[in-house]
Image 1 (cartoon, one colour):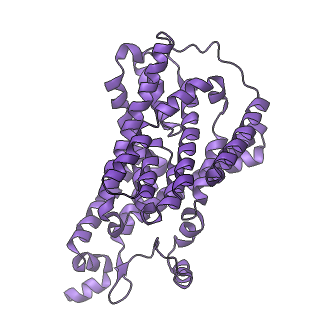
Image 2 (cartoon, one colour):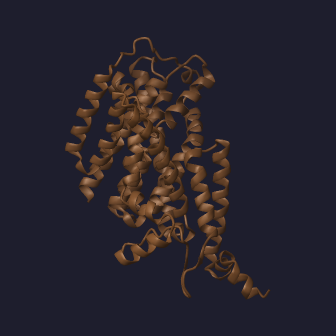
Length: 401
């Protein structure tokens, strides 16, 4: 068999050989990165729910590049840039993930489905038991969001692009997806990929930040759980209805996410069994699975090698680092305000990657003091972080759109 016949038979190799050397190198690196993410997810080092489908998608899409015509190459997974109705109709018939991408991802529906599922598994009573403490921590934990915006503008991004990447500091993946879709559609794909990649890394990185900023003796502080008020189901439902309505009134552009989250909370508290089983199972995990898979498939070398992506990578990690620092500083404010009765590690949970950051805080504290339970306070801060991130995203979109 001649070399030409071999390359015609195995087109993935042919496009590697004939392509731009930079793109070829990018494809190889992303294939390796995708395989690595699968193993790290399978081992539990990174969040498996996102990393396993994302890694498989990343490795597969960069391997499966073929000749679409005599002059162009691409894949039959997704065309994220197609918008012309005639071309879109063709893509829907050819690209096997195009219908899921077009009808759930590129319009923000998948973000609303995730918020519905998150609401169903969230106990809103955690924020109601200590609302001022939770919101104070959450405000401090938006430090990365606030400071990344001017930095992003300074290095050359537009105001809209800067706002979209800044929201990564709130550590709320669906909110980043929704905001970037509205404000920076041309960078929507790389911003969303950067956000979810870094959010999965918080589980491995934030423990080191906690150990760096909080001495061992303070990490072991026990919280008083005896005087936690009992919050009734009707109180939670009332809080959810009123809060959602007020937030939708103030920030209509983010209303789909507010409604989705608080609707999930209300269904949980109402005990509607059929809805609960549907939302916390097929909806939440189905949306999470396809989100991870689509993010991986969108990590095609030609997209990721956009010159702006390196700036996004730097800004994304900067935003999450500053937000973690800000959250812990908020924890220290409450530590001093309560004369040493508040564990400052809880501050990291204000970075609202529910429930990851709350679990990180609890895990780090129990390494020092096995009897210390702070999860209720940490979850309160985390839920507060969801609300503050949504408010800031709503402000950005309202002003800049």
